[in-house]
Image 1 (spheres, rainbow, N blue to C red):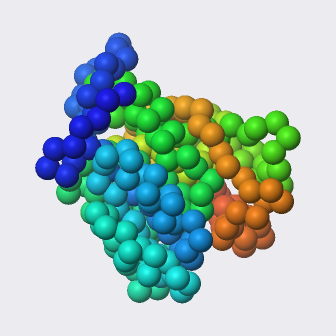
Image 2: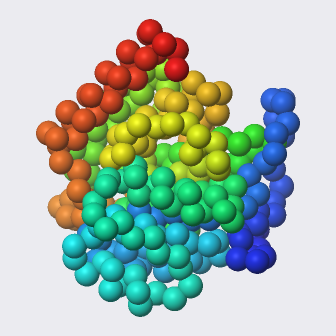
Length: 257
């Protein structure tokens, strides 16, 4: 993959894979969207590495109450969008999409907790086919012997199954936050969930709308003892996930939307 910056926009310059599907406008201009909520300890390094992709970077501070706002002010050359109160990860991503769509036709999302290696976004970019505008999901590959929180293992399997049952794509990591989304198509999918559930609902809505979803292996970094910063709450988010999937299954059966 090669990239160049022109007028503040990351432009993809590379050989693309051919496809037998009907030709469409390819994703050529990319921006990075980083949703953040109380990740003062990790956000600066994540943003610094993301800037090395040489794409416009949009950081959405979703009502952080820690030192995150100050850390972001110290970083030059990024676009910061601030929510006055916490609205949820999905809401933050949508705010980032709205801003990024003014300068790009694709958004790379990267979590602010440090679990992703931002440079791995190049693998996702390299998988973009010619004439197709898919969602590309970074399939996290666990390193043997590395501690992985049980909530992550269980949540991934639970989510993968119910995304498929809801009419979405069959994936091995439907919860990964490192992705490429086509814009404005992803905004137009009318996803209702505004918290973590946004990332699974949009996969189902994409499949129903005929937007391809593909996976590309990426690395994942879990600190020893599972001490990375996460706002996932097993019981609360399990109930929210169940509610979201119930709604999606209902609409699949009765409305086909």
